[in-house]
Length: 408
Image (cartoon, rainbow, N blue to C red):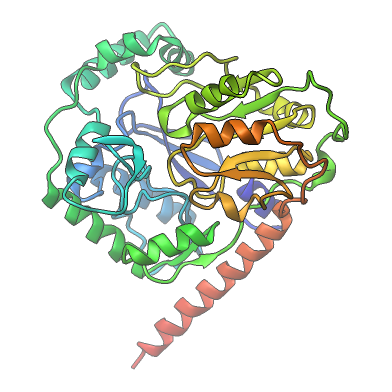
């Protein structure tokens, strides 16, 4: 949405993105005039190489040399590389999670106690990263087979078929994780990200994540909240939801999102209203929760407008979930854990209710409370884009001043 809005304001924007595409050769590229996609079917593999991937670096350099950007905006480096050849190009880096200091998907959850948020990098990190990565020989065999099948089945359809397979089947195909990640590798990865951060203008959507980044040695981070389309584009809220209006969970059906805790709290509360749970399955074959399947994006707004409340169960320190802003735009109350940046988006008793993270009993009690009839409008996408334009201008001007100061 940011790139589209920037184009609408007269900027020229080209996106370079890593893409899962089983059936397409690893590191092949495709796209159009606005987007270059590079296939990386094993995201996280670069963790074993200081977060760097030389092949992706070379592909980025080809796009950079052709496009000749005035500025680069990094949104996420998962599946890409910590050593992108940026040269002297002014660069902005928006943080969305703890990926720069947590190689386990940026989740900051302990592998030895998966219900417990991590207090920060420690000797446990190597075990966590090893458990999260799946770059075994089984992955390579699966990708080789997918590329052979691609001769008869289009790559996009092949990817959808793979995602439709039960997780236990996918687990058997992929196999077990390979060689463990070492503490030395993670130390070099952390140093690489800190070095990159030192030459970037750092941005985060929440005060929580900005402070976490500072604690992890990434320097000063400017807070620019996310924004979404103006509230007027969302359907009108039913001001008096009936008892049949459902509680709604929207998110990946994975442990760190806590859908099992939402369902357990709902049952503990005596099922005071229907519960609808929408989202794609996670990657853990041992985790399953009864659900209603994924919800098409076009149906998110009307679903929230008709809901009793949006209910979240996250046990990881979420940064700034867009679904909360979508709920507020639809006038839908939010019941969410007081973790990460969520308290910056949900004012307790105004937009809904907060509860101690992981506390099923407390969540059940919130499900029984009378809900607010309105919520505060969220920040708009236009406000976010305007703030980013200001950051871009300041970054370009600062880089120009630095270059002038080096002239003899």
